[in-house]
Image (cartoon, rainbow, N blue to C red; front, top):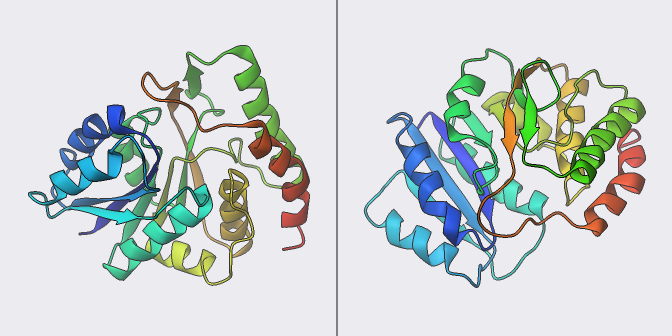
Length: 229
């Protein structure tokens, strides 16, 4: 498969079928790898059931929650080992519109960021405090890291395989949402071309958000350390 979509899951049973239906219907050369952290609600079991009849669907399971970054890294390496030319990362809760995958892939950049904070982008159904936290986090990272991109904390990205391989040559230090800023910073420092494509992020309708205060605290002290890493 030329394009692989990597999506981590934990208790996304209410969303997973809708996500997979839409992704697998986009194009025949697209495959999906779900990295499930032992979801008690049966997310992994449902993906495994569907994968029996769908060779483009792959499931990687871990016994428990072990961090967002490590889930993505596992999925990335699986996709690259399978010969992926493009790798898309996205949330499993339908906050990222699967129809936008094609828009990200249309770019010729080495790394494409699905951006909420460029003209045409935005968020839908978020309370004010979530918007302030997200915008503030991106501005904080942009200021400290000296990057021009407007959305450094978003998780909707499309990578060309050479850029992703180069970024993964060194161990990743972050294991929360700072992982998004860290990988973008590495791509920039390695000289890869980065483009932002506007997207509208929609708050999940089913399931429970994984955002927590601990994730925000990690960002405060971890982002400055990325500059030296």
